[in-house]
Image (cartoon, rainbow over all chains, first blue to last red):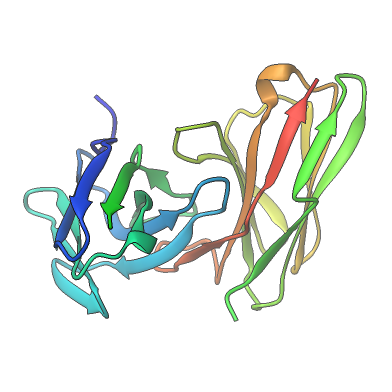
Length: 112
Length: 114
């Protein structure tokens, strides 16, 4: 079982819909959680960063963390065609120097 | 400014060539990273530099040789690569290599080995 599970999709929704993207993880050491957006052939762009259970909102984006269930979500409100991209969840443990552990990424398509 | 700059954007090299990838950041970050990303896969960690010292090498073959000349620059020297090494190579930086810091990525170098 991989440490981070993420449905690769594709996930196709109509413009204006609320999008829900999710990851589950098995390693209790993960304490810090990020969501990145990656357009084709570009580098990942940091969207949200959080480290506590609960919700964090930034514009149309809301990140949700449930550490007891080892489950994180990203919600996108009023989705736009420009939101079409691959969304990667990433996690980091709470101790020592290490890099990020990524989910596979979900390919999101917003239909105009 | 959360910019990490990578050069070149694209690189084609033969299996006997030697080339280098470059990465630069001016955010005062003290941790820098190299990741490798194959098509339709997530980035995979290769190396971590913390305060200009190599702190993590994820069992990367010796044909990849990282270098951190100063706190703003990170290089990846390539020698005798194989076609399967073709990928998007991503550089990232964070304030330090501790857990509670966001990582910012560059746009990557798309490497093709022929």
